[in-house]
Image (tube, rainbow, N blue to C red; front, side, top):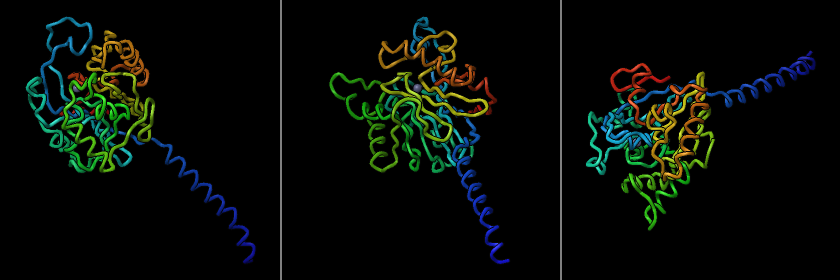
Length: 286
Ligand SMILES: [Zn+2]
């Protein structure tokens, strides 16, 4: 009897082990059901010709200053961090400003609860808020990090729109062990969230795709406005030589968003707060 019980338990143990293994594998493979919110931390006036290459001069537009929050899988991920230093404000006055760490409180999060910040590019209004979220891991393209902490400040370099204090904060985050360098195009950085290059808004800017039914693309300034997508016109790029690559990547963004341009969320377009249900400063994208 005892011997039989022992024997019969073997297949059960094997089955249990197999099931545990399967459960483990499928848990790893599963993409969390992420939520996506756009948080408007300010507004500004800009010239369309600076946002949509080839647009007529002297046309003005009100643009939104935005950070995006992705929640799921135990992470609270900011895509871009806004700014809080006044370095560039004399050139680019912002109205209706709310500091990004105060802005996340509007969706019920404390700044310390932001686990990660994915930086699309190093311009002041996207990188300049990382020190407001001291506990977050910061993710940036490796070539973007290398260029703007190095060659950009050497003769022949281009550091337009980069705040030296932001660079200090980026280096500090690295020495604290909380910087993650994303190495190139089509890299999964969280389950179901992939980073893409090729937009060339800056030296090595990135955009992200959030998997789900349906998928969404957060473009940041690799596509400033829906108008770039509709008119097949480039966003501002690191050099004009990248206009064609930028337009090609806008088409790629639409494909990555399952073919629907509304699900490509541009960097500064107020329309994201009209296309998606919006309360106050917050648009519920998904
Ligand atoms: Zn911007």
